[in-house]
Length: 495
Image (cartoon, rainbow, N blue to C red; front, side, top):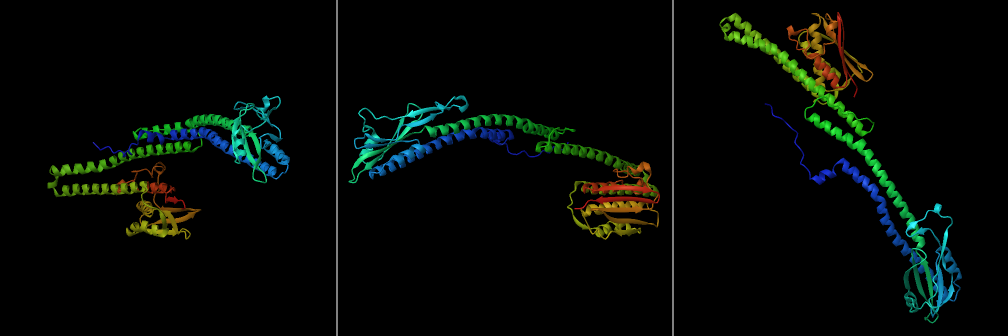
């Protein structure tokens, strides 16, 4: 019983590693990344919010410094306060040494566009809601009880944040000391602003990111289903078909519609499957033909050996005749084996191709025929200097055509070999003046083991070798025949 040869299996990976390497898993990960990206953006928006609040506080500090410097010099602060209220919406006040207001730019006015943390669409609001954010002095009219004011009166900068009641936000307070000519603190520059405008901008970003996340989730779901239907399922069917072929099943076909890479792979797989089936059928047919061709000489050898064993060896004439038959059958089997090896080598395409000289090929292919005394007329097109081919295979194929012409040409006549160019294709043509090929046999001359000259040692493989060589090089082979003019040709494409 022949041994069963199987391909070595790769080491089995860990279950998690195997799952991660699946195409389906990679697609899921890609879709999840698409969904998660907007939510990562939300977290980045929070970081951005903190940075914006720091920038807001720095802006208020710059305003407070400007007011403090102007007040220290006795200059009016109206222009600075107006600019701060116009660009920042900040409330600017100047306090005296008792922390009582001596200047107030007025309360902060906002357009309220949120309910809690949710933005209200402008299309659902009849008119903007204006909200006034004021910070009146405590009882007694002095802000001295606030820690940021106390810090400023002591000569240091003061900072504070307080929750507002009118909108969902906090208010930033910055207090800077006003230093008089003698270096004493004579008052405080007090600037305040809510963070509501910053938060509204971030709410808009967040709302957009939430919508984008929802849209991404729907897109990921839809694209995931589409990819599963158009990619993973065809690949699963392709894998199942490959396993059926590996198990020895014949005639496996895979139908995948479309024009993408998976469909192209499936069509290439179908072509490969059909070619494998054809190769298997070819191998089975070849085995049957070989067994049939070997059966007759083996039976003849066995019969002659049995007769010699049974007494024919004692008669010199009978012994010589039977031994001659055995030698003739062995020689025929040797020719068959040699031709089969040539045919197998050519069909395997193992020989490398290169630019080979046409005149060298023709000289090698006709040398044995000329050595037997047959004249060979050679006509080479001067433009056909080289041909892209496997030199040994081309010599074998052309030799088969020349030997076939030598076998059937009239005694004393010449065999013609002509090489010509047809565009970029090179044509090798062999002619003889024999009786020609009948209509019934003309369509069978390239079949393996078909021969009409078995009595003279024909194997029926020479023309099959020529056909296999031509087709293996992407070329063509053909024949035309009439009494006195039979032509076989091989045409090979350019490089």
